[in-house]
Length: 91
Image (cartoon, rainbow, N blue to C red; front, side, top):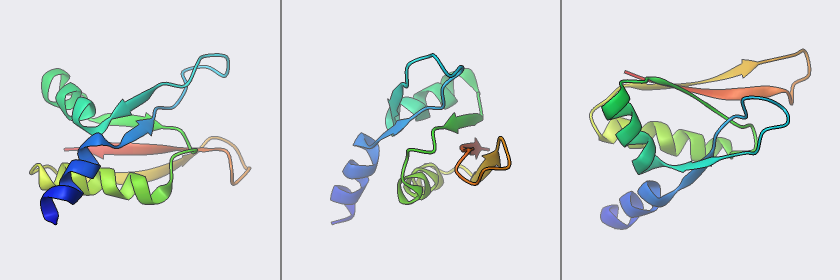
């Protein structure tokens, strides 16, 4: 059962935050994100608020299973509660 759950996590897609309001939303699979983290040593990624919070927590667990420490925060960009980004910091 654990292998099935791991497969689901690896194939899960998350929507990245847009660089500008006019740009198109891009999605990324967790495994691709892990490769980008490993190769580029980029450790902070921003995601759209359209992602389910539960899926973002699964992403944190995915990186913890890979032996890294991961933190998830909500970054508020205005006083509106719905106007935020998810920030995933991987160490």
